[in-house]
Amino acid sequence: MRKTTMSVAAVALLFSMSASAGHQYIEIAPDGDMVIAGPFNAVIPVPEGARVGKAEHITENFLAEKLNVSRAGYFGDDQFVMIQVETTNAPAGTLTNENLPVHMIGDREFRARTLCIDISQEDLDADDAPLFEYIEAYNVQIVPAVRAVQLSVTSEDGTAEGNIIFMRNVPGECAAMTSEFEEKFDADFGRFVTSIQDRN
Image (cartoon, rainbow, N blue to C red; front, side):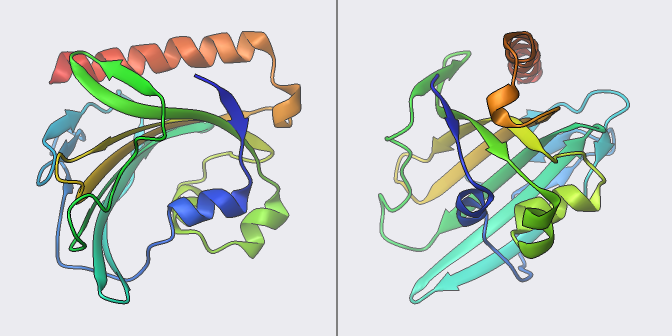
């Protein structure tokens, strides 16, 4: 996967939903695992000791289009995993991820992107992106930068999309990220993927 750098503003465009809704695509099980149901069905295992965030269910309207979104996450002091599922009432084929490289989890094809984001405290204070507000609410260290992998899958008819984001704080700007950090990140991400395969 190609490493890219993305601004806070660009990431905010990816996760810019707000307001409450009456649907639920993600629930937190009694054991703390995240259960995805609706357009996709899976269980995301939560490791022992991780802090589990509250599931949020929101709706956004764009002209005649209605998006229903659920998100939830689990956190350590300097990393988090975010799950987001959305559906649209727009015509079939509206949601697509065909521009992303292919990543396999077991026999299931996901599209994925790897990126590094430089984030200052001023960026966070000035930005109202729900993704970053969610992370900040759980005291996760994301300044001055984060490395992330976003896995994406869409339904066959293109009216639903699921995203899994695996993110960790970089102790320096993206340009200062070491090969050792990248190797450990990739190895930990591999173990994360294996945990999903084993649970499902």
